[in-house]
Amino acid sequence: MSLVFFGYFGGMVAITSMLVVALRNPVYSALSLLVMLFHVAGLFVILHAEFLAAVQVIVYAGAILVLYLFVVMLLNVKEDDRYHSQWRIAAVVCVPLVIESIVLLSGGAGSTGHDSRSLESGPHGGIAADNTLAIGKTLFTTYLFPFEVASLVLLVAMIGAIVLAKRDFSESREL
Amino acid sequence: MIPISYYLILSGIVFLTGLVGVLIRRNIIAILLSVELMLNATNINFVAFSDHLQDLGGQVFVFFALTVAAAEVAVGLAIIIALHRSRSTINVEEFNLLKW
Image 1 (spheres, rainbow over the protein chains, first blue to last red):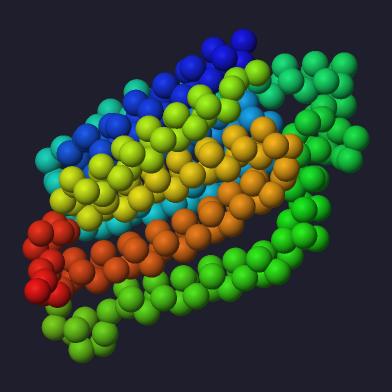
Image 2: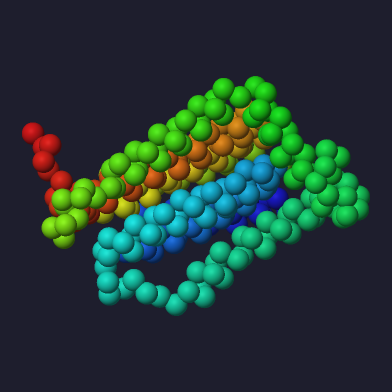
């Protein structure tokens, strides 16, 4: 059963990653990268890394890809084929989400015996809660210093992005 | 269970695709997207080995890789915007100011 899920997610990851490189329009490339990120999240669910799957969807698909799409729209690369009917993309994004929830629910029901306990967020809850708890404990004990350094990296990146993309006053008066 | 070699092959395919994308694409946004592909390939590897060795360190490292990817995207896109402002193009063949 898990081999079927791996085959689907892995095949889709391979195909969509090739589409990212092959498609000419950067908007389509970014959207196929979005589909690929959802399927990588599915692979994480198979590998019992539910917290990372959630982070993958929220941070990668929610923040990074939106940033890409903003810049693609801002730079106005191709005006002619930028618009598209959106329901196909939405359908392709929905399929891995449905399969992920099926895997999560079946795994939670199988290990704890009844569904209500697996949905609770506690130390003795389902698999997802256990994974998040374990990662939190590891992150804030063993890897506490790298965690603080990561916050510094984010701060430096934020300042750098603002400084790089800032328009000078004289320049903005010319335009 | 799925053998770990399958995950290694998959992440190898994705990494090579990203590498080829960096090498052959001329659109600088597509090049950054290909870098994201390579980062995701390494993330798949990390999580696969984390599950295989029953060690949470791999998953924590993916967390840090995500942080670095977010920083890279923010700075890279800011550089692209600055480049586009000065050259009005995002084709990397036009950026030959530092070419010897």
